Structures are given as C-alpha cells and as structure tokens.
Length: 269
Image (cartoon, rainbow, N blue to C red):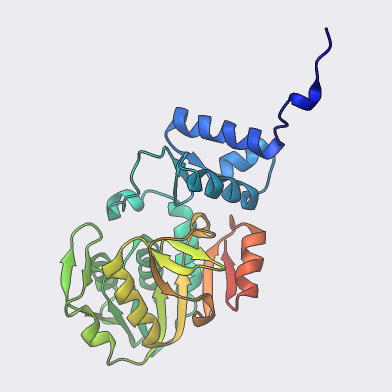
C-alpha cells in the first residue's frame, strides 16, 4: 500500500524543538535558557526566540533566565532569595564596578543584590577616601556602614518596600533630584537591545530613573541572565547608559547588539 506524501503536513525542526521545550517546562517547572541551548545544540538567542514564540501562543511564561509553565505568575523574588543566585558572578561584577570609583567621588547606589555586591567591594577597597554614597537600599546602607568614615552614607528616605528593603516614592526621589553625582550604579531585571533597561517593579523603576539622571556617569550592573530580557517597567534606553557591567557568561551575540545600541559593555571575571 502506497502512502500519498502530498497529504502529510511537514513539521519544521523549530516546531519540533519548541514542542519538546514546552514538554520540558511542564515536566520540570522551570528551565534555564543556557540549559536549553546546551540540550538542543542551538544558541541562547535561538532559545530566547523559541521561548518568546511559545509565550506569544500561550504555551509557557517567560521569566528572567528561562521559562515556567503558563499558569505560573511572574513574581518578584525577595532580596534574601535573589542573593543566593549567581553569588560569584555578582561578586565579580561588584569588584569591577567598585574599581571605577575614585577618592572624592559621590556615588549613587540602587537597591538590589548586585548593587549590594558593589557596596561590599567598595568596603574592601580600604585605600578609598572621602567617598560619599547615596542609596535607596537599606541593605546597601548597612553594608557601607562598615567603611565609615572613609565612606559617608546618605539614605534617600521614602516609603519602605519590605520585599527588597528599598525606599521608594513618595519622598524617595526628592534628595536624588538635587544631586549631581560622579557615578550611579543601577540594578535591573532586564537589559535588551530594543527594550532597554527594565525592571519588574514599577515604584523602584521610578527611583532608578531618577538616579540615572542625577549622575554624570550612569552604569548598569546586571548578571548575564538578565541580558535579552524585558520586564514591565522601563527605566531607560541603552543609549542613556554609559556602561553595562555584566559577567563572563553573557551571550556574545546579545552583547554585540547592546554595544550596537550605544552602550559600552564590560565583562567582569
């Protein structure tokens, strides 16, 4: 008996791969972009494209660094949970960023685990003198307290967000709007060539934006899992940022696109 192949429906390799990705997400609950790239022998850029297409069709939900089943809501991690992720990479980013600070600088430090790593690295730079640090993060402030009087610490004030131990509006931006700082170190949940710098939380994004505008040299600090990701609240376009400091696990293709968008990129090791 012969089979009429003209009646069969051709299935592309991409469709097969995406179906297998969906099954993995349903089975495991969470899959990382890097793990999918290794499993299917494709680039991280291809995996992100696949996951974006699957989310568009309602088959899964994208989150930072990977994907979860579609019925899992996107949520913000508490500070203590996020601090356990990629600790070595964040420490490397912190050391590189802290190395950009000079005696006499006024530095703005955003809330977050990566900016806290910057604060820890600043404390370790015992040769630094006469640095003023302004922060909206209580964890950052308590970390920098160890370096007094070499580093003077100013807390912005504002309304407390317990999840991140951060200070937001009303009142958080009043101090920042009156400053002209040397540098600002800004954390985020997403850095994308087209989408710019984005964050999962709207109130904190407002403070980040004000910090960026209040510094002569705004610098974004973000681990590699945040590259190519876009979250709900936009902070700025990449052209508004002087530099992105990320880790050596960053996808070279995404890094190239970020540089093309007008932002210098440094890989911390």
